[in-house]
Amino acid sequence: MSSLLTFDRISLAAPDGRRLFSELTLAVGRERVGVVGRNGAGKSTLLRAIMGEIRPVAGSMSLSGTVGTLRQASGIADGSAADLLGVAPALALLDRIDRGEGTADDFDAADWLLPARIEAALAEVELDAPDLQRSLASYSGGERMRLALARLSLDAPDLILLDEPTNDLDRAGRAMVAKLVAGWRGGVLIASHDRDLLEQVGHIVELSSVRVMHHGGGWSTFAEARAAERARAAQALDDAKADARATRREAQVARERQARRDSAGRAFAASGSAPKILLGGMKRRAEATAGKAERMAADMIDATGEALADAARNIERVTPLSIELPPTGLPVGRIALMLEHVVLDLGGRTMFGPIDLAVQGPERIRVTGPNGAGKSSLLKLISGTIEPTTGMIPGTWRSPISISMSACSTIGARCSTICAAINRC
Image (cartoon, rainbow, N blue to C red):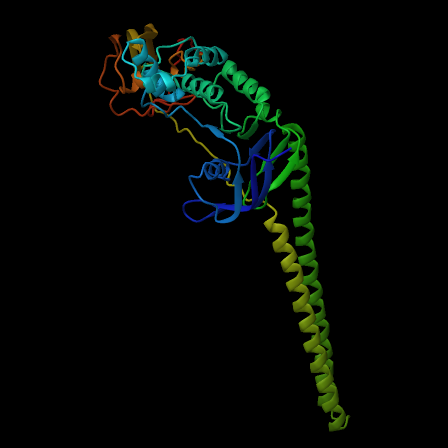
């Protein structure tokens, strides 16, 4: 199997110069390869290096064939659906021809099958054929990701790079990504935390500052192998610590034994019962013995210290994530949020409504719904980023509120979450 992508002992660093990983050697052909590692390990940076956006600090890389990339599309808001699909110029050309304004060059360059291919690609990701001139800002993050998936089908590159492709997707969307990966005829390099998706790959590479680990197989067998490797590393560190303690104890015992011999020698010399020439020889031998013992003890301590350092380097240091939510102090009867007959239209369609909702005190309400249902739009509306099409959100409390676009969003200090379907937990 010929390689589409080859890494030869490459190393990458963060913008601040911190080394992310070192000595990665890998060949990717028409196969599925997963790249895993903790946040900040260098997964996305590796994909950027493949695209030529950054240069490795060491090693070399070679690439053959065409490459397509799919990254998190939730932050994309500029342009239209046609722009995200990469077909805006080609559609404009066909439109000129349809209006009778096409030139001879337009006819030569026209992709007459493009509309049918776009329709098939959108159907593949279960998106009803939208107005392709519609602003991307009117699409949810999950819908934009589906458009990005459709673009991959249209472009059909030899190698695709997927950076957390299932982020922002509901169950149906994740199934579409899995289907794309399973059926792709070229090479696939996936940087992801999605264990179900990683079950489909035939090779996993784990990046860390400690080492690069290779494993043939999917997530389940990789997780078992990694757990065993970590257990061996932890045991090796424990053994090295025990050896270091034993060496220090032996060195101390040897020093104490030598100190007793020296004390006995000084007492014998003080007795005056031995000739000076004999005492001189005894002193020289004692000093030589003591010096040799100290050097041996120092060498042993250095050796065990190096072994301990090697064992410690094989243990990845991880700072645990801790999130604390302080008490809100909001009285139970206080109105935190009020929505009155609120309707929101975006991109020519009704996202939701009419909604009537009153949140009192430190109440928590879950936000649920498929991609495109309006979850993020509802939070933007509550925060004042956008305004409702009809209805009211009375009160002046919105201006200082900070909305977190997450599955359980905290509204300021009120700790209230809003459900798109308005189903109370």
